[in-house]
Image (cartoon, rainbow, N blue to C red; front, side, top):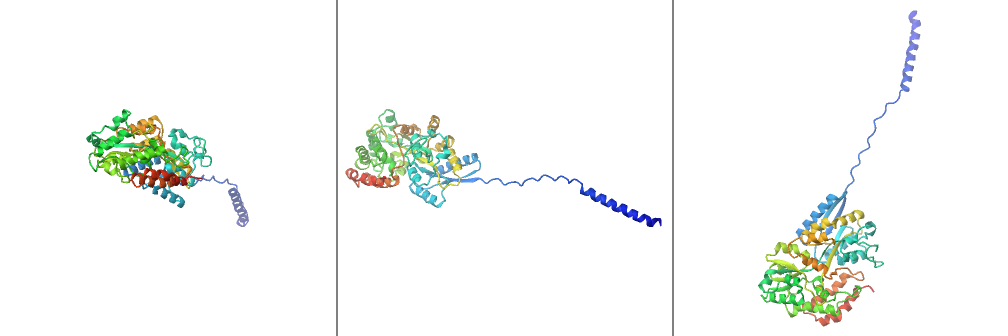
Length: 449
């Protein structure tokens, strides 16, 4: 009986305990959760920038690749790919135009100074003006920068023009590369000494050329290749040139231009002291058969590597107007108008034209720095041979005529008219009078009306 009465009580105790336990569980504070680490983001991929120059040989390709690697190591978030372009002719530029249209051109590329207007006017290269605020254009030779800051709409040039089409990679000018052994054998005076004495003019030049030519039928006093640069200096040195003063019309038929062309014709036709016009003069110079070879700084590496004779350089002889008529050659790095990375491309342009990079390229012997600092020039003078590097600097200082595009017309079309006509004169197929009578009527068609 006692057991029966105790059982209900025990049952109630058990139930109460269960209820108390359940309530305790519901009021228990939740345990803190561990902080969650956000998933790791993969690093942003480097932007690939392709850039191109037109090297003459493997040595140049190697030095540009070295420069590309050095810049690549400095630029964050960028992977550089250097592409050597081909050809010494206009096809290099034509290939670029085709690639830009197809969307396959490099982000950054070099073009000759004569082509800046053509590429800019066609909308093929980018106006960098807005990205270049505060950039010092006065660090470079002023003549190239005038063209590179030409505003197509207003014609204004220089700082504040609203235009910047690129930066100059380098400059160059003509010298005469000398075979000193041939000159000594001929008993001719040393052109370097004549230049130091202020006696290096057209008459002295012709005298040396004639004496060397007398050494044999396959020996020549002078050689130059068939393009506008070599024949242009003779026109310039007489006080003439290709164009009128503001480069809006042909100037090939002026009395001064004709005087320069007449003297040059005498080298080929009348006095017969030059490698026949149209033949490549570099191979006979390299084999020791030409005393004075007219070429730019870009010819130095090949001569260093291949000449088996005593050689040096001298500035061009002075013409009737007291100047040598030299060119300031230049080319520029520009940005593809279709690049997907304009700001990084502009940063690359600046790196490619830094003094450090220009010094690396100039040491090869091909280029003269486009920066005007005394330090850049002093460094250039140490890049020998030739021993007489001062000849190039003298050429840049003597009333030099800057290579440049035709903003008022088409340079490629002008060159296509002028080149064959002058070749006909220098090969004896056309007289000076015939040239003068017709050249500008045809050449003026390429200018804007």
